[in-house]
Amino acid sequence: MSYFWKVLAHYRGQLHGTLYMPLRWVINPFEKIDSYMPNSGTILDLGCGEGVMAVLMALSSSKRQVIGIDNNREKIQLGKSIATKIPNLSFRLQDILKTKLEKVDGLVLSDFLHHTPVAQHQNILKKIARSTKKGGIVVIKEVDSSEFLRSKLARFWDLIFYPREKTHYWDSKSLSKTLKKLGFSVEIKRETRFFPSSTTLFICRK
Image (cartoon, rainbow, N blue to C red):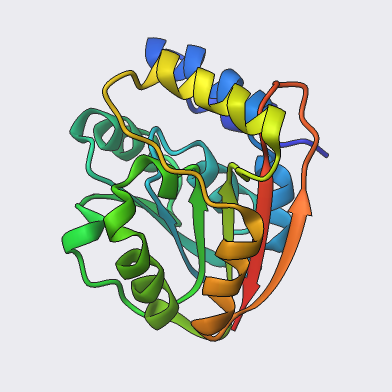
């Protein structure tokens, strides 16, 4: 059963959220990502934005404690207003590059890496590896630069929606190799979405 309507209900009355949430749902395989997450324990959604993924994860299992982290004050305020009605959900206004992460059972990074400075990617991935408990799961949703046409479409959309940002896309082999060096086993899943872009999931297990 899709959680689309349950998640959308929490964004009604929020103009930006109501418009943004359905668009994000079309672009991202949120429910597929959710299916890989542990059913219990603490889960971090890094670069959570308006919190759509975090809301879904909290609603789909009351045994989870879901924490959304972002450095955008407006988006975190929206998330916090939603979290008042979901007891196992919280949001933090933090810069992940400057924050020490606690040990957790799962982490999600959905379109996060390519919106951060490429010089910081190694540090971010090392921080994630240190934060993941043994037996924990990390799901990274990213653009795969080796998908020539789809990655070019992704860059077009990023230029439209984030014209001031410099983006860097990993190719799937390089990112997988880096993650394995950090102690993860890595499974790569390519998702075909209606939205014309590259959607690749890296399911990383400790």
